Length: 404
Image 1 (spheres, rainbow, N blue to C red):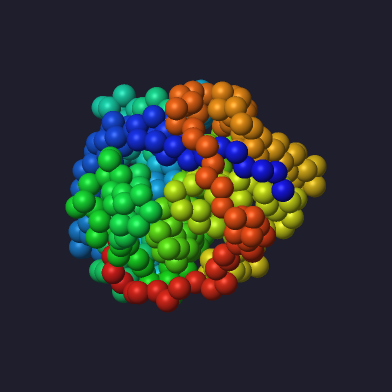
Image 2 (tube, one colour; image 1 turned 60 degrees about the horizontal axis):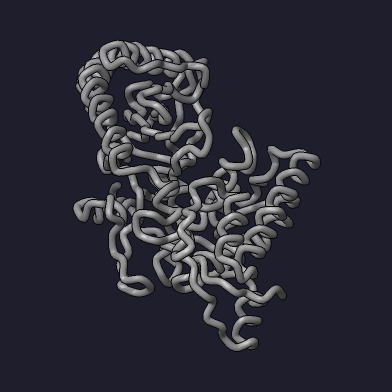
């Protein structure tokens, strides 16, 4: 085992200048996207209320929910010019609006109504509309970011308890003062805390949420199941998953540095991180090293996550053929080699240069952030690197219908 010489934790986590603060969306970007969200809500609510009235003689106000990486708290800033931050902002109406059978025509009509409204709004705001995907309407609202608006039908019995979620999550609130004693991220507001803690939907009903497709047809939606799995995985950790969420961000940032497009998917990286993660208190560098030690080998294999209900037998690495898996694994092996070298060299300047190879120019160059590694006993260090990672075998018990 290579001897560790340096402590690189503050390179990743130092206030303001640490790597994590270079890859997370800025408070200004978050605020700008929130303004766009409010405009989308304000424009669509009366349109869809009128649309539902035309079907049921009752005006129903649609619901809206943030999904994807902004809901997980893992959205990163782009690493390359062609990349963009992606905000998924779902629109929900009860199934009754679309009839018992939810015909192909009803899906097309749903899309047409929302697209017409969003085109009018985009004209007023100077946004660009992209309808190339059949599962959402994309709005290019600002440089380096877009908003995808998928459309859903929710069971009538569920709709009354289906609470909205507009929160763009930069950071999970910690319920503990352990580790570094940080409770909230600096760009985070305390009034959003209840949404994070209780942002749950009954899993038994999630399978009955349907996503409309622009070319007709409906498909079962599982975005909430993935979010529940990830949130429960985080909550099972000693630090409520704060460090694990950072490790996921680092892996995604590495992917974005190495591939302008493509590379391992975000959900694949999340699953791999969760499978191989081990808490290293106040040492993100060692936690990242531990996960990357398994990354290359895992990327060669089929990858499953039994904790995501309904997807127990899904191979999350299936989209990559043998050669693509080998290329992904090769990049991952180089990533781990660079992390190992950065930790084992006694030269802070060389360590910074080495970290920049996989993680790019957003790694801070301030060598004062690097300190000598405080050695632990050989027995303890061996235990850290040899003990199997914590793997969640089953999802936690779900509290039902608490909104978010």
